[in-house]
Image 1: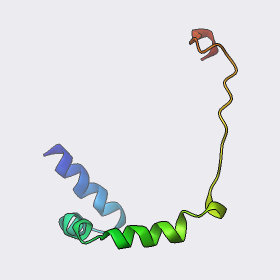
Image 2 (image 1 turned 180 degrees about the vertical axis):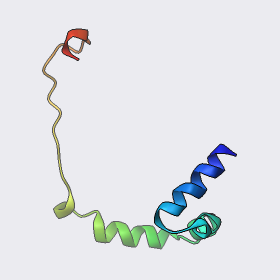
Image 3 (image 1 turned 45 degrees about the horizontal axis):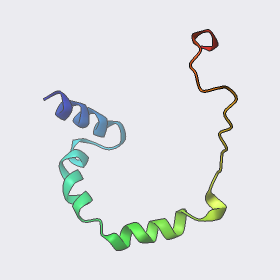
Length: 66
């Protein structure tokens, strides 16, 4: 019940409760081609941001560094 109440309230933030009622059928209607089309349009090298993680310590957690 709590999860259902959460999703009903969440749906009200951007539409209304009918969004929640139609979520699963609309999700099931998405095809592989739909996903590939979106990926081709949006997941392009010029749209990416790359970050580098460079460790600076020995990997041990030091509580004083919090």
